[in-house]
Image (cartoon, rainbow, N blue to C red; front, side, top):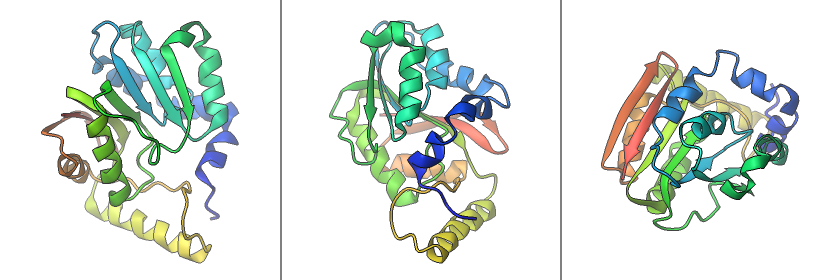
Length: 215
């Protein structure tokens, strides 16, 4: 199967994106939102924010949260902006590659990623986690809600298959859509390697979990 460039993959599916992501309901988004502190005016970094399905729920629990959202797909950001037009003063939406964007230091109370990081390598993730760690205030939280591999064998297979397809199609660099989920245990290991002092597991399922890492 031909691999599609990441931003193009999501932009071409804008009309069906929300329905696809919510095909199993919004329980994951609600569970993620409940982990975000309800303190007034907290600053939140949302990586791969898409159309803001997690923000739909977060705003219900904390209507004062101030969000910096980063995504590669302009059409998804436009939809998020239209949906939450009344919260324009609370939203800073950035069209960018979050691996390359500078988040700053000691800026955010919470950072989160929802269903976005299961496409990348260990090296890419650890580098990103280090940036997130630096961007958080003391005792800040990073919440990752994502698709994760049930076994090491499953993880190994999909990393190998992604590598094979890239070689077959002559793709040497860039972000292309293929799922390479890691096990919960490996995710925790990467977060701790990046500097987080503790990682708790919430809502673990066969093919996914929510992780909460504390600075």
